[in-house]
Amino acid sequence: MNIERKSGVLSHIVLSFGGLIMLYPLFYMFLAALMDPYEYILSATLLPIPSDWNFGIFWEMLSYKDIPYWFRNTILRITWYLAWTILTAIVLGYFFSKGKFFGKTVMFYVLLSTMMIPNITALVPTYIMYARWPWAGGNDVFFGGSGLLNTWPVMLVGGLVQVFAVFLVKQMYDTLPNEYEEAARIDGAGTYRIIFQIYAPMLKSVMAVIVIGTFGTIWNDFLTNLVFTDGSTGPHLTMVAYGVTKLTSLVGAELIENQYIVNYPGVFAAALLVTLPSIVTYLVLQKHMVMGLAMSGLKG
Image (cartoon, rainbow, N blue to C red; front, top):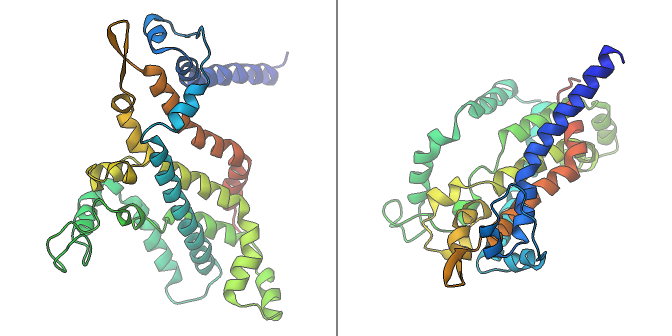
């Protein structure tokens, strides 16, 4: 066996071992979710094997109390941000790549420079801006009131333009020949028709990167709920990432044999359901994601 083949086998062994380590928590959650709460408490093992496989727990948790609201709210928010992110990235990427206007390069670099500012440093100014948003939340024009806090707009107005998405699409545009646009203009096509009918279909790979990134960011967004809402609106404004912190108290405890036992299998089932959408999204789009990242790094 030559050295290259040995190194390849060793790499596969190491990667497989690492993959098993990363999959173990998910596998543990799946098996533990199928158990009875009392049985789980008694099974102090690294690999719980249920005696009665209760697959109905997943449907039960999916329709349990506030959990459906969390999923609905998060999916609506993801849909909103995906639409805006893709739209702004396609349009701005075109103008920064193919457009001709004064200061284009300077404006592009200024836009990129905003990526160097940590989001946490803008948290307090953003909170004040939302709290003092005029003509909202009972404000006395520019003073008092609660602004957009504890309302749906506070979940929808921030971060509508994603600079990294604009950068990726602009890089992709740079790889596309200008002859497509020239031929379309000869046929009488306008700018926006060229963007959405000529170029947009060629951006599918980089769009997959944006979809995965945006989906993961919004699905795992815990901070917005924590900072800009106080829970007074109940589940109607709670997102998945914030809601999972309440799973233990939401699912509660069961009285079994004169003992109150936390329903850990229910918690595991809900946590697994929360994890699956991100995994499925990545698995479906991973091929396009790799291609999009590779192509957006080329120069035309």
